Amino acid sequence: MADMNDARAALKHYFGYDGFRPGQEPLIEAILQGRDALGVMPTGAGKSICYQIPAVLLGGLTVVVSPLVSLMADQVAGLEDNGIHAVYVNSTQSLEEQSAALAEAASGRCDAVYVAPERLGTQQFTNFAARNRIALLAIDEAHCVSQWGQDFRPAYLGIGDFIAGLPYRPVIAAFTATATERVRHDIVNLVGLRNPQVSVTGFDRTNLYFDVIKATPTAKRQWIERYVTARPDESGIIYCATRKETEALADDLRGRGIAAVCYHAGLPADERSRAQRDFVNDDAHVVVATNAFGMGIDKSNVRYVVHHNMPDSIEAYYQEAGRAGRDGEPARCTLLWSDGDITTRRRFIEMGSDNERLSADEAEIIRNRRRVLLDGMIGYCRTTDCLHRYITSYFGETDDTPCSGCSNCDSEFETVDVTKIAVAVSRCVHDVQVLLGLGENGRPRNLGAGKLTQILRGSDAQEMHDWRHLDSAPTYGSLRDVPAARIRDVISQMTSDGYLAVEDGKYQTITFGTRAAQTVRNDFHMVIKQVERPAGRDGESSYGGSSGPSRGTRSAVPEELSGTDAELFDRLRELRTEIAREIGKPPYIVFSDKSLRSMCELKPTDDDEFLEVNGVGQHKLELYGDRFLPVIRDFLA
Image: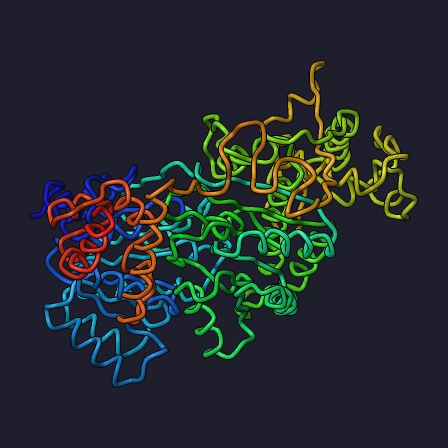
């Protein structure tokens, strides 16, 4: 049986790394010992290593379930480039190609086969699985199994049935980048993990600079145009809420001489494929896309991700923003939002679930869950706290996260004292619970944010007088002079901060959160951000600098190599592009920017020194050493 010494040797041999990253070793060790595993690791933390190393050490085949059909070819190419033989089977192939791939997987020469979750239920694949020994079933993007996750895919619910139908049960390992405790619970139960080794590494991405700017639609577009134009050689992703916006913004950028492509689900498959390929191959520096683009995208040198609109959850935002800086180098994540974004997102929620298998009551429960997720996103836009800390707290990390760069900690924004409103809201929640009494479950009844706002503003709606005499609440009309939007903002922020909570069920109701008792203390104080921050000139926000933080903190723009090292880096990058075009693969599969920087620092001149470069394993030495080493030697000469 392979052990961790074998795993470390395989890591160096195949991937050229001297040691595992945090969180990888416990998962790999558990899998090698035959134990199920669940890994929750942020984008760029190396989840794939956790099943790729066991794939070459376990006897038998590793099946990787992945929703990323458009990226499977690149994922397999990356493994082949590292000397690990793999194939994929998906709907982009003909039946003959699928059969050939499965035959290769069954030959004994193959370490891994990538399949989409929908493929597991086909007769072709169930027959294959019944005849071949599957040692490990790795489930990528495992949050897709949960309706509490941001990318729920019904096909993931069939994974448990697929496992149950196998002649014998393989080791099961599930991986995701963004999963709250509730989603992790769903993964374990719905997939059927047995006593899994659970590794949840820190969610904080210290190389990312987070920025939030409230702006009108016109100001958003101007900000993006200035920002992208000022960085013509950097790779970036711009997310928009609608297909129309992606096309219009991509046209604007191309009109300014930017190599930009558009990507959304409404485009023909060949256009989507070409856009993604151009971006991954560095032929286009910017992709303007809907959230149909990018889940699991492996391009390591994305220097910025800009959201033109507010996403519908922290999970969705963090996964999309996390596509920046996968190489560990500094990158910037900017969220541009407006009140109209909130209206749009709420309208999308009310349009209902597209899952025909849900009853009306079940669909309403799902909508309520989505409302809760949206409240967390709204709280991120409005919070005065550190943005890094807000994200890590959302995912359940209780330790204080030191800020590694965000606009809240770097900016002198204005705040609004809402203590009086918050106290009134808390008292109103109490008043309503007294008036409505206990529900069938023995817990206090309550109302939603809209009804609470009506009570606080003294609404004359007939239901205030006829139903449970809501107009008799002591807090009725206590905030009559406060705009309804401000009260809803405060309720949203109180929910995000834990003073209030949202009850799950058919109807969304507000109740007390874990910090509710603090609102009755004499020293209770609450402020919210004065969020108006117009975009300034040359890609600047009204606070902080054009490229990121101010007051001497680290820049959000990657530090360039200085002097002759910068010249060597350019030569190596040109060679990488040349090789990539020759072999028809993305440049990052040849070597990442991080590996090129390591070459500039170490300046290897022979094979042994080249193997010391970060990301250079034995197979890559054999493939590319005789191309890169002469360039470095000539440069030194």
